[in-house]
Length: 174
Image (tube, rainbow, N blue to C red; front, side, top):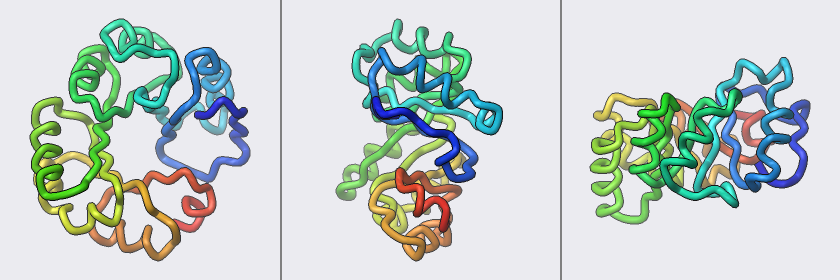
């Protein structure tokens, strides 16, 4: 979700929409564009960490929960996700894997905020630790550094439930 107009016709078929970036002032127009009939039934998640002009507090979560097109949020912030679940939103915890400690911290965060799904970045790093996260019993998404169809296939074959990519070409080939 950048400040550039979203053209729903350019989006590949998908099961979820992740809107990342943009500003609070352009959010209504973006939500309108993503409410066209061919996308109206696709759940929409806003990445709140990248949404300019929105505080990361209780009021922000309640504001987003009141928007009719928003089904959930994505964040690295476990506290925000806990608030969002209480407000009736679906949640995705985004975890960056840098080393073994980040795996442990990520698992601890999942257990504390109980998101509906986890998005692991970079995707290729997730291949080696997927079993640690699979034991949590929630959907696992892989994202980041998905540069070609072969990488997408390796990630999905490792056991991820889905991939998230900003490249329409990658999504069309996966």
